[in-house]
Image (cartoon, rainbow, N blue to C red; front, side, top):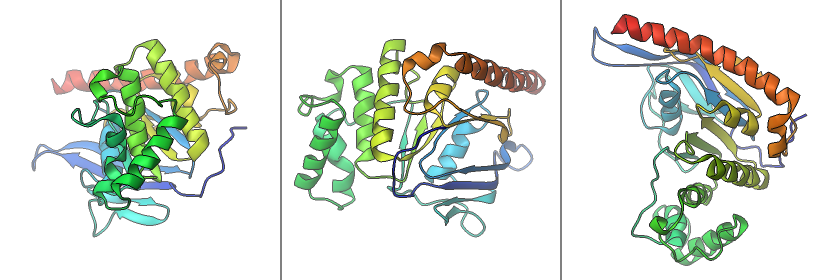
Length: 280
């Protein structure tokens, strides 16, 4: 049975019949169609699917970066967007970590992490810096407070970005392929760091990836999305107990899950390739 840390019950996401299209009248592209998915509080939910299928569109709707055309998204029972409110407001309860880094190169790492609560006027600069220092210590980053992002490896920069998100005490972390550019060793270190953070905080994680090994290693569930328009095709419960160690990658169950999920993703990738040929 998967173990979830003790948490305060925040971060339950409900996506109900969400529809989103792009383009002008007569040439709309339907990106998401009648997509429904419930993510309980404290779950690591991994989202996989063909490139361009609409995964990031869904994440952006949760974050409040664009509107939806139909359906509704709620967080802890509160409507983020839906009928009469097509676009969610951007809030500190939902923090996004993107593929490309967003650290301020002119600020040292401590002030990068402390930035959010100061700008939002939730903490004084002194309070935010003290909290940031504690987070860095917990994450093994003591000694890097006065360094600038450009002086860190890409893996350490990603760790600083995660801390900058967590200092806001979000209900949900929204991660869009945050480790895509990292080498295998750096990625494995970041996986362990993310899990350590999760075990401490219990924050709900909505994580988009193309790396199936990453999805299985981190997630409580892996949701395979259809080729465009996006909706869940199949949901896999990852019945490998947490906390996890890298030796699970060689286990029989891990290999079985990898084969099942890969076959499901491949079906949709072939459909996406065929659709691309038709559209071309």
